Length: 287
Ligand code: AMP
Image (cartoon, rainbow, N blue to C red; front, side, top):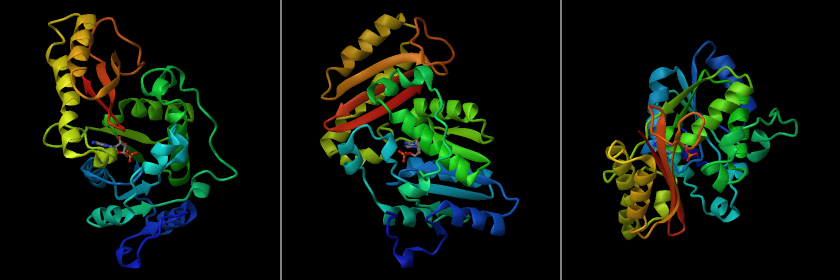
């Protein structure tokens, strides 16, 4: 079901399905460049930084708000996912030339689904791919269908979800889609915690505890020349394990292939996933 949007808030263009959106773009926005920002809602400054960048670089911006069931490997996580549509619309109402699309599942995944599954290879086997089976297939599927139905010139993604961006690049290449992909820097709170819709489930004590994530990433970056890679990871993991967070992985990989590295090079990235209570958090730093 589409979220119910109060009329008083519908002062800017909101679309519930792609045919309506496409007709509007064709008739009212012919020849204009389209920037797409896919989101699952519960918007924060991280999402808005993508919207702002898209706004500067395109004539019109489409923000999709769709909590994609296919990318949740855990049904409790899907149920618990924050849904704040009224606040989202209010935040987006600040922008001119921003269209909002809140499609339902049937619109995103029609009977005649245009998606031909792509082979994500190693990306599906390591880090997020390993710990969230099926997640990236769901991400590739939904983003493919958005590209297919909306046909944007550019699409904007956060580098907080570093491996997700690699998945989208691979899907776009394999599906032969002509859209420019733009990776955007991670927006953090004052303490350095990457903004995430899931952070709203954290209490003040937990918010403080999460600082171990950015501290560990900074430790890796600052000490990358001091230790060899094995010692560097061991030291970082030992430091992390003193915190109340439960570390799922800390790995240093090549930013394209996601292969584990024996030596840090110019395209290395350190990725972390950890649980703070029930909340799963990810972050990364380029080395
Ligand atoms: P989500 O709603 O979590 O699917 O995120 C929608 C988009 O916003 C994705 O491309 C995310 O990578 C991006 N995003 C989420 N959090 C941040 C952040 N803190 N900084 C920059 N981009 C972000």
